[in-house]
Amino acid sequence: MKILCWNCRGVGNPATVREFRQLLVANVPDIVFLCETKINSNRFQRIRSICRMEGCLAVDSAGKSGGLALLWRDGIDVSVQNYYNFHIDSLVRLENEDVLRFTSFYGQTASRSRQQAWDILGRVHHKVNEGWIVGGDFNAILNLSEKEGGRSKPKVLMEEFCNILEELKLTDIKPCNGWFTWTNNREGDRLVKERQDRFVTSDVILNNFPFLASYVVRQSRSDHEAILIDTEGSKPNRERTGHKAWFRYDTCWAGEQELKDLISSIWEKEESNMLAKIDMTRDKLGPWQFSRFRNLKYKIKGLEKEISKLMDGRTDDRTACLLKQARGKLGHLYDVEEKYWALRARSQWLREGDRNTRYFHVRASGRRRKNKISRLKDEQGNWHDNEEKICVTSSTSLNALIWTPIGF
Picture 1 (cartoon, rainbow, N blue to C red):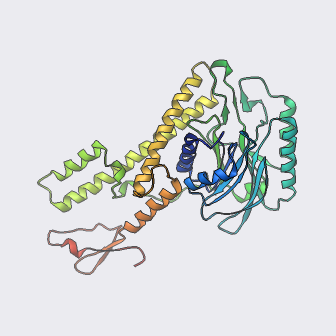
Picture 2: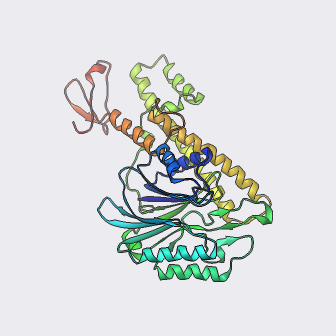
Picture 3: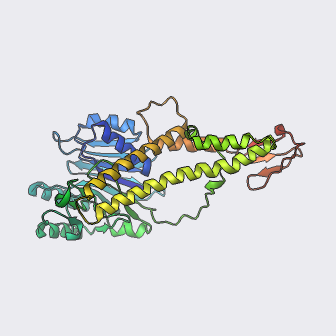
């Protein structure tokens, strides 16, 4: 189960919608919470449709401030219990029929509204009978290590936040890959950074999900980073994927001159027959495409680490400029990654602006399963699976090789 929270600072403009789609592309969350949407709930249905999220509950903004939205993808059982201007409380039924409570929260800075928001969390706490996760923008810090630059936060506010978490019996989940989640994007000694966004959980969640992990998801434009919690985040992956052995052709690389030269060099060899050329293409094409996509992922991760270093490191005159440049590069690579999945899905009928990660992943994975050759039958009637080396002699007819999908 993946839950993503983001203070989007207004989701009504195309640039923010595009950044939201990129968030879905890179992380494929099951549930998404957005705060400060700054639009009417009726207008949010268009956003939900563009991003292909199955469920949605939106809370109206108050003019050009506030506004909440909770979205979930197809197949996720979410039941909203109650909501207000500062929170959306929901029950989530997992695949093993267990139930957890997720409360998305938007903290306030004004004294009266802040106390009202804390009281709401207290009322929700009295109804909790299951594992509890609270996530969002709390607009509060626990100690001075969660703020750099600007004036110090009043000690009384930090103590108040600590006391609230203690009363609610909630534990702060430290992120694995970053610290500060908000910056004012100013230059020099005017740059301020804070850890305003976080997940906190009950002890039941920590006991039931030992591999629970939280992450900071760096953004290319927004002053607020997104945060992600994954109940299986640190679980070891024991499966062997064997990506380098894949024999496939992704049309998204068709415009790459390096790929054209690679294929031409193989098929221009006159001394090789067709089957040998196919064999060489398989040996060269799979690793080349895997390396190309892997390098793209490495560049994205490298830029995310660079942004984390700038956000969490020392502040100087160059920090804001370097941060802006790194976020611009990251936005470009997110666009490239989005196009990769769009082209692999081969959905030519889908309009250019109506793209979504979950949709493309399903389309691409479905096509891969459909086109997979599980085993081959030779002229003698013997079956060979994909783990065996199939030797085809010159006397063997290509028509004698019969493919059958898994399960036949």
